[in-house]
Length: 315
Image 1 (cartoon, rainbow, N blue to C red):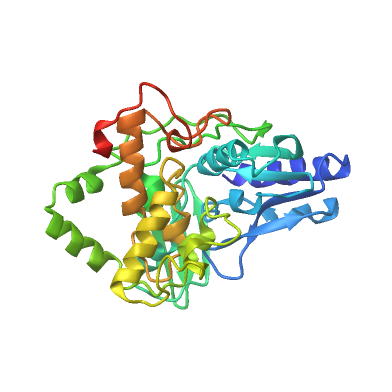
Image 2: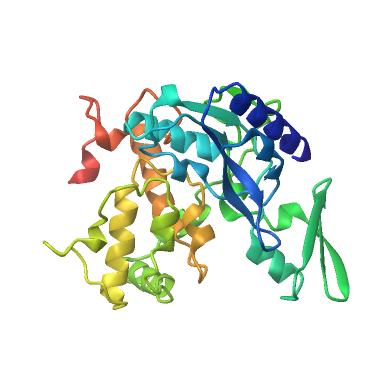
């Protein structure tokens, strides 16, 4: 993806210089290795800070709702699907948006890289030919990128942007993957086993709301967990309050989640939050033949009604 960096800079400079956009939203090198951070550039002379690599996992669609300026944004496959959803939900004005499409060769999970080098300090990393060269005090180690991918990237079947005004490269062949193997394992459990499973899953949650804040779908002015009149859920780390928060947030994402992995990427304690949203994703696919964000002109199934909609599941 090194070619993308130069193309992004060229496109950004051209758009800003010609006055076609007021700002470009992309990525720049983070202050720590393995971390690229969101970046907004307004000056065409400052586009050289923009980069694109295997650490650009942040979903930039999160920075688009209700903007009044004209912006260009770098969008991977999942980012573009969230943009399509924002357009459907009237959060983004398509006429003010220029999408720079980036066919994605998949993003790296920094936690997996840290584990692969035995938890040693990482001071530098480079990538080439599907391998990462990780270095730190007194060592240098090569890691296969395929072994340290984000979980959502390892099963992604929509790596190409669904909408783009300019593409950074040719479309990539989509991979085949069994996306719901772990979901089926949970479905096969008894009710008591499932309750114990999810109670254990969320036992480490500290209610920091990083998953919510990172999610491009969570743009409500006031979240239900912050309401006090009425109060929908307690604000403690009591297991019941914690599970209620996660379950309700997941249901708010039903039919809308693109499995971008932003929630798990942001979680400071590594909770597999996607187990909930992917169950709902699987059900929407089976019941409504629906995948979120594939068409900016079609509303999600729980946001509309058709005479042929299945009804058995609600009984």
